[in-house]
Length: 427
Image (tube, rainbow, N blue to C red; front, side):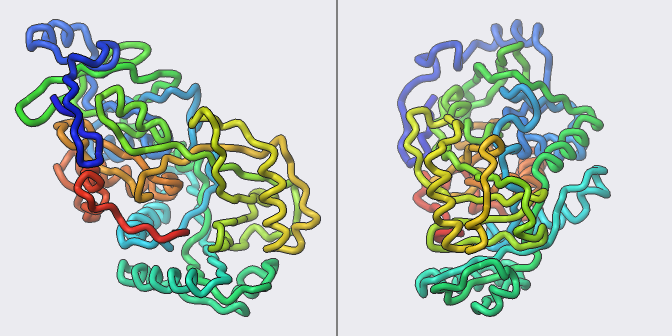
C-alpha cells in the first residue's frame, strides 16, 4: 500500500511497517473473527465540532441514522468552535468560496424552522477598508468574481460610505473599500447545538472524551478500504469514516498513513469589558493592510489581529499577553474612541484555525481510499461554511458526488495535481 503525501509524491512505506497501534492490514479470516466482536457503525465521524455535527445531521436526515461521532474533547465545542467570533461573509476571492457561503446562507435562513434553534444569523454586513490602491484592485477583482458566482449585493464604497456604515472608523489615509449587506454574524455554538441535537433526534450518537487510536485496512487493488476504527474506548466495524478533526486533522491522517497538509494556526481574540462604544448592528470591519478587524458582540468589543506566535507546541492555545499591546495599538489607530477601551483579560481567548496551503477545504474522498473522507482545512471559515460542508459531504458519501454544488475545486487531490485554488491576500 502506498500513502499519498498530497504533494504529488508517494511514500513506499507499507502499512505493515506502521506500528499496529496505528494501522494494520489483516487477513480476511482475522477480520471476520474481529468483526463478530465489534459494534457496526455505518458512518463514523472523527471530530464533533460544528463541521462534524453538520455532517452527522445531513447523513441522518437522508436516512443514515447509524452514525457515530467521536471527539477527543470532554464536551461539545471544546476544540475550535467555541472560540469562533461568529462572522459570516460571502465576500471571498474564489467562486467556490462565494458559493459555499451562498448555500450556507440559504440554510441559515431556514435553520430555526428546520432545527428549532436560532442560528444567530444577522445581516449586519462586512466592511473591508483599504488605504492602498493595490489592495483596492484586489477588492475590485474579488467583486467581479463574487458577482459572477451569484453575489449581487456587494458594492465598492467610498470613504464617505465607510463613515455611514461605521462612523467609528478613522478615515486617515482611507481611499475606499467594499461592503456586502448580507454578510454579518452567526452564533457558532447555536449552530453546533442545532446540528448535534438534530442528528441525535434522528438516531446519531456522539461520544466525547474519545480519541481515534487506529484503523484496520484492507488493500483492494489500487485502493484501500478502512474496515475497522479503534478508539480509546472500543473498536467499530464501519462503512465509512470521516476526518473532521479540525486543527488536529493531520494527526488523524497520520494514524491512517496519510500526510495531510493541514496545520494549526493560533488566533487570539481580545475581549473588552462591557461597553456601549459600538452598536451591536455595526458591520464586521476589516482593514485590508493587516487584516485587523473588530466587531461588537453581547455588549463587548472583540479585537482580532493575526500574527505568527512561533510556539513550540503547534496546538498550544495559551493566551499570550504581549499581543494585547500590539492589537490595542492598532485598534486605536483605526478607531480613535478605542483609546478608552479596557480589555477584560479573563475573557480573552486563543483558538486554532485549520490551515490548508491554499486556504480552501479538502472535501471528499481521500486519494487512494474507498471509504475514508476528508472535511479539513477550512482555514478560519469552518463555522460559517459548516451548513454547506455537511450537506455536500453527505451527498458525496451517499450519492458518489456532490449535487448541490460542483466541489471539484475542493477535491483533496488538487494539491498533488499542482492545481491549488488562487489565494487573494486578505480574502
